[in-house]
Length: 322
Image (cartoon, rainbow, N blue to C red; front, side):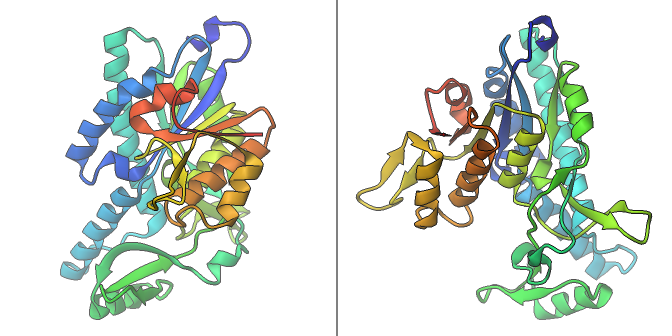
């Protein structure tokens, strides 16, 4: 266990993509159980892990269930994004805890696992609140969108590529993890912590309620939240796990080149050139850059879930560093 060794262990934040967890609870349980051995293989006498994850498919499923139910039964409310995010953090964390617990029992590891339903403070004046562009939830007919907007006038909908109407929300920059002290306390007491799921629940200070927090309907980029989690936990490494082994430039072209080892400066240049997909790889590269900029000896790895242990040991993935 971490406490048995002198000095602080190397801390590694591991970020799992929401799509990697599947679209249904049954599929998620199977995938999590399959992934858990690779995650635990990262842990040794000098390394401890913090796990974060995406939740896009899961939040979409929860929202859709409430949205459809509300059209059939007026007593069922349309569930807003902060609550859907909290629900998804809870049940994804529950599945991860069970899978981790079962695998640790098999291998006689003495850690514990705990999920922290995590709030992340954002700036109420973040420009994204004035021009929301992040599509969420199911595709609706015009009539369904108008019905939901009538229930809550704050809901904004846009027509999406001829496929129907979708709600759009802000995607503000994460500023502070509200539960950071709880996360650190658990880490210091031999827990594998699951936190900041889906980018965390965005909250702002409520000036009408003594400055306490209140949730806001928005989506925080999960990779940027992972970078902030690494910063707050004073992590040494951020591992962003996805479906591919490496980041590539000229992706999908005859001259595609996998990147094995690049500097922060090179990563900046490639991102500014538009080498990475806006909704896929670029957020991961930007998050890796932000994490490394927090401390010059940090390393970020972008690689595949199947090769997580190799990635942490520098044998797989794209390594980004100063």
